[in-house]
Structures are given as structure tokens and as C-alpha cells.
Length: 108
Image 1: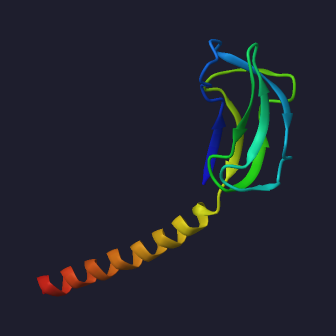
Image 2: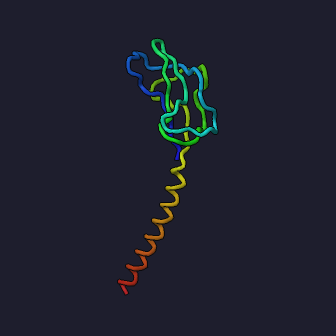
Image 3: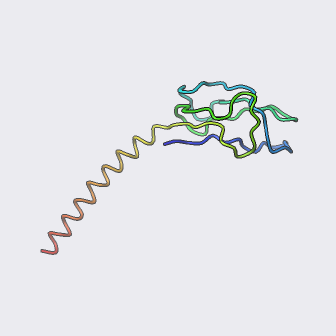
């Protein structure tokens, strides 16, 4: 599953934008939930944006020096949940087929 990393609102900052200072991780690196991804700078403060989930940093959209607004997507993470969901979907399909077969037998 792909997860978007957005610039969050920062308490105590009156502005609605920040500048990308530097990325702690590179594309294709594995990250843990809560791990620092990028340092951001505003007129009043410097802060880090952390990974909302564990996974792989698929793509960096906001490059160092870019100015981004609150809510802008800065990066895309890919989690392993996609594979698990696909496996669950396969299991669900089997259950539906069995139910349909049972219904057909009951009708006869």
C-alpha cells in the first residue's frame, strides 16, 4: 500500500509553508514508523517530519531547497500491507465461491 507523506501543521508556526532542508533517508531505503525522514525550516523554527508508517521510501517529491505548503505531498512510502491485503482477498474469494456452491445445492 502506498502512503503519502504530507507537510503537517506545526504548533507555534504562523506560516503555512516550510523549506526542505535535507532528507535523512534516500529513495528505496527502509524506514520505521516515527523515524525522521526530512528536516524542514520555517521563519520561526526547524522541525522534522517523521514516517507515518514503516516501509520503503518509494519516491521523494519535494527536493532540498523546495518550499512546500501545509498538506503538500513530500514523499511516497510503500508498505508491505499491500501483499497481506492481496492474500486476504484471495482467501475471501474462496469463501464466496463456497457460499455460492452451497446456495446452489440448497436450491436443488
